[in-house]
Image (cartoon, rainbow, N blue to C red):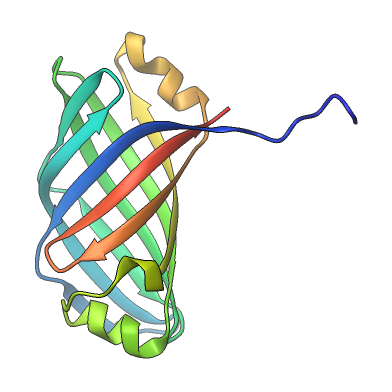
Length: 155
């Protein structure tokens, strides 16, 4: 076991996702269900840029007053014209009053929120096939009109 090393994280990209008005389904048997439309956005990575295409959504489940499970699904279009499907699972944890502020669209200091994610990527672009062959982790911040994330590849 001595030859096993801890994984390293290398910066992959910064992502800014513009979001629309939440659609609140309401309290279900699993928790409070919400759907947040994805309107667009930008990606800046090492040696590439992309845009977030409109039409995706963040499917949220408020499990407890502190814990939100997030499942965002959207598409990126690289500057070279390649499409990348993103399925990003995340946990967001905050004190209940901060969670309520976020849900009302009010600004909250990102340092007070635990927001970690694990994006997965799929693409038909052969030059980007490696994206489907790696694990990624990220950190994020929710703002009233957007979600900002920093993604890292696990090496």
